[in-house]
Image 1 (cartoon, rainbow, N blue to C red):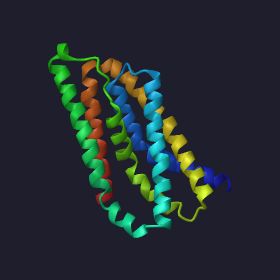
Image 2: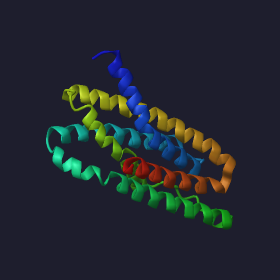
Image 3: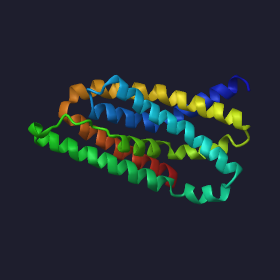
Image 4: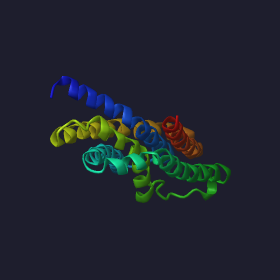
Length: 195
């Protein structure tokens, strides 16, 4: 291992974290009064999935490569479906709150199930990173995945913080913007993988 290993892992982590950053931004927009503990949890979930997916990909390359190749074609469809559903729900909630502000509730905007779905949807393309680190030994692959996860955590915390600040200024429109961002990320993942 040399300095280029760390540089490459950090750059790979930054590239992979862009979808999670945007979803974190949307979550911050949707819930501008989010508590610090929840923000840490959200960033932790995204970082955990970004760590886990390349490791799963590495194991797939070393064990069941032919199954992974068949699954890889479904990645854009899964991401589009999951993020489109969550983004659409957020968008509808935002439209309702803009039309009828008196019906707004103080219910938490992002539940555990939705967070897990977001984590999977934004990290599922990281499975293919297993191919790029396939020549690493298992400890080196785990270290690379750990760096990717750490970079994702930092980037997602920044996304949530930016979203929260903007969400306080946008009031009820923040959920609309957040929903549109999630749908846009789903479409971006789909288009990027299909062409």
